[in-house]
Image (cartoon, rainbow, N blue to C red; front, side, top):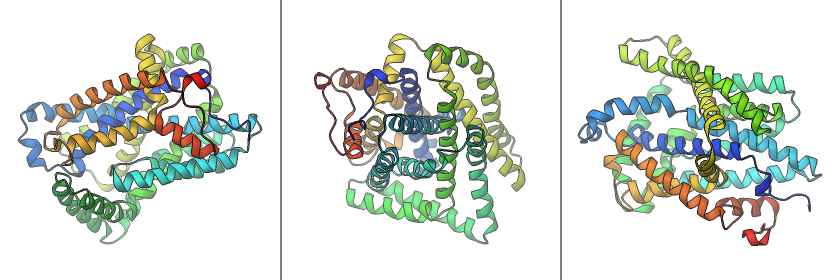
Length: 399
């Protein structure tokens, strides 16, 4: 086990960390916007002083970021686990055992986060998809890409189709969501944490874990992981100069293609056209394609354009992605909910964007300060200690 140790900071790919940092900003922004979907009544949003701005800002932000940040984060997750597995095998370490332990720790953390902190947790999905990813480690790269695209593009549509074919199930799922939203609006503005946890566990079971959305999200994440692993194998990000040239050329078609694909669903919605079930399923597939393409466009923009302080700031956040992701959830608890400032009722699109920028700027500053003194973020240090069976040196002076 002497070869099994966390990756030294000097060997990290700074562009990958920077892209991960940008993806984390998108996740933060979309999670703030998502509160309007899962808890805030429309009548409350309509009374906001910013409602006239929000009515156009909200669809623009969703057009640019909704689903795209999570897709990018998922691709990088698959890339990171493929990189970890390859380096462990090259070092002669028991890669499978370490990898499994790392994922089981993440799975426990994800379900704890889902139950006690944030209803929109993604860590448990990533852990489950990561456990399946190990089954594909010997699959040839073309097959990884093909299987990844099938799962990433069609899993959600398969879930929707299965739901539509079950008599009465779709109505029950919709009713559970309606009742859950009303319960959350009352509970999340209160200061009874025990009631909050009880409502979260109930909502997770009734609206999520027993609904088609859960396996569909996990299968979609696995597809994106496979694509991320393929990107690692192809070596597109291993050489910074080569990566910058590839990014410049790719951005020229990724950005316009992604923007057009992402705009099709809003365009259909704006026309008020009553699309049939077949077209709705097709639009769902197009949306997932847009999430991948536009997410990769964001990544290409960072790799090609970022320089100096901007790159360093994003990379610092990306190196502490787990810590910063969990910190964002704690901000929701103590800024938006009744345990703290209770600003949930102001969370329209304008407020969400402003709060996301403030939080992320603070995370950039904190991450740079922390990493100037320590090798890992606090959550990353715990994760590594549990993964490798020993606590790695924390302070830079201990390296």
